Image: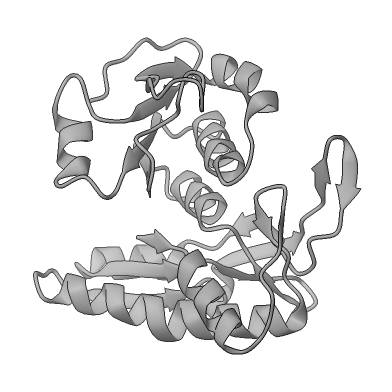
Length: 237
């Protein structure tokens, strides 16, 4: 499980009198914002997720992307309308050291990973959770990447229509990307990068829907959007 914590980070920043600003779907991360993000992700959100999973078993273990250099990163170069935008200490994953996660999985534990990374020089970066999950899925040679969010999937013509696209290829997604805005940019980028890195399918589902995960991966129709390689034609399962 790779998690973010956008709403919780924004809430804590507000309590501390620090404004939340965004560009290209990314949180502009100053050193002060990064300190808050690390605190909230690892000390609050991760603790809550680990506790919830541990109530049901198998047991979960919290891991920061900094630990054992799980996520090695470099500064992200963002652009809006073709123009570069400085988003601060936001990182792109350059490599994934999967040994720690693989050890936990072999021991029957569920790793719960916060999306923080570290550069070669020790600089710590805030990494978009969807991008981090995509990189980890590729590093583990996972069969699926499932992105749980607060929308039903990829809409065909939002906001004019709430029709969800059930399935599309990576090539079709690339064609749509220039028209995508806001927080969906990193989610779709994550799905695209995962599929192009060998993950069989990437799914976007509404985490607010009860049993959404089971409905998406077990039923033929699914409840979200599945992205697959160009040479595949698949059902959601």
